[in-house]
Length: 409
Image (tube, rainbow, N blue to C red):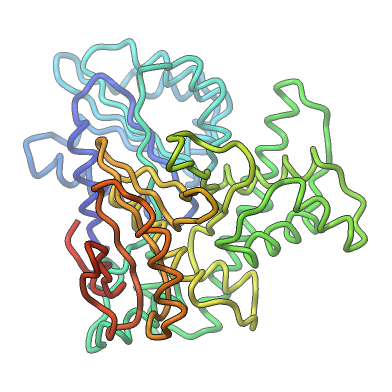
């Protein structure tokens, strides 16, 4: 069990604060493990076992608590009067009307609530309406390269990175005994199918309950959209573009259906949309986005035996690393030029380009051009697998991507 230090520190920074902590992320990304690690911290630091109520709603023994009234009564009877009670509700989306439980518990004194969920749709809507200004979201993603490498023995950083690109960062895979390509793919397939069949169908059913018109989930279409998005990682696309592509391939689909299915994949944390940012005008552009996939192992599963651009895979890794480091990330537009990432944190901006290799003169000048055109004093970085071009070029830093990923946050 690898300690997720960055996420643990974020939870600790909110400990005992009068807000509900909502931990979100794709299935098997480590949310439950994070809660266990946090509970162990509490027990080591003076909290007694009776002060902790921990329920995982994917476990059969808690199925009877999936009625919100029963759940509320169960928790209420176990609250420790006069002392802080820490409540952990894991995969809370399995409890119908769970937001009523959370809202009712919140008004009690000396209550610290932590909930997790695998679907952003479930953890928005009613919950957001009830708890506006009273919750903080911590979004968790699979292992970073630093975390992944710490579990490997006897491999160089380069070997570990090649392994990471192939097998991704889902925690269980990194700890798998006798890991083979077949076992990894079977595990990823299980996660993927559960997301499609359970999380996204649950989302569709919830929309029906909220007044939507019932529509049977077309899993073939959903998988087709997922394959398309996985194949265009790093490219600017629109819902209209996806719709036009599918129609030209012989599918009879509507714009609204494609929009709904794309964002069902987003809300299940399979794909992350990235908005474009006009560096000159300092504003978000509403047309077109890029999409990155949560883990390269999932991409390798969706696009089996397919050769694709190494640079876009590196982009994908860099995007999620920037998220782990607490940045708000955009795709940059500077007049007619594009910057791969504009990363913002606490009012500070850093510009990033990502390139597999800068040794070709044409590639070197192409990647430098957008950053040289931006005349502000913010940090400008090019990340590359190439070790020969590393250095500083008129204030633009070229850093080896494995070195950068290995840095302490």
